[in-house]
Image 1 (tube, rainbow, N blue to C red):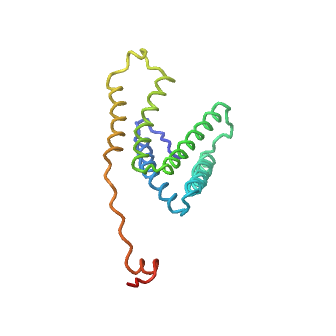
Image 2 (cartoon, rainbow, N blue to C red):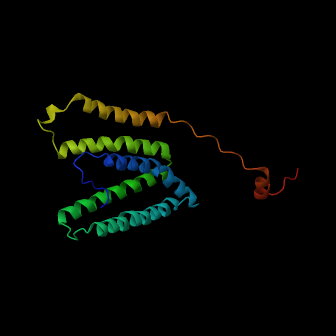
Length: 187
């Protein structure tokens, strides 16, 4: 079985997978922007890059779970509620990924766009979770540290966005490349 433990002791396997997600999503924006730029198509490069994101999703999110389901001998019964909520989750995830690309196309940089996304998403998640699953004891039972955490996440995203280090200036091309690209210098 994959990612399941039969021991009665608590496992930190969940933490490994959470950190795997942090690392993967942490480089996602930079890799996506690099792919977009690598398409050498200022008008449609972001859409070409997103097409390959979709292919990657197929490979990772369709084929890999099929292998795990077969390996675990899973039932092939899919209740409608689970299917529709899972489909909706995939749609909002894909919309978010597409939004990242559109932000890059509107001159957002990976450092700024992803800082806003990763600071804002936990805030949205916390607020949505509060509304959809109200706390025991009502909203008055929420500790002030919760609200402080939301403010700190938002402030952290703002600080990273406003004070990110400037990238190093582009290195000039070697003289031989410049000559080949522009022709010999005839002074």
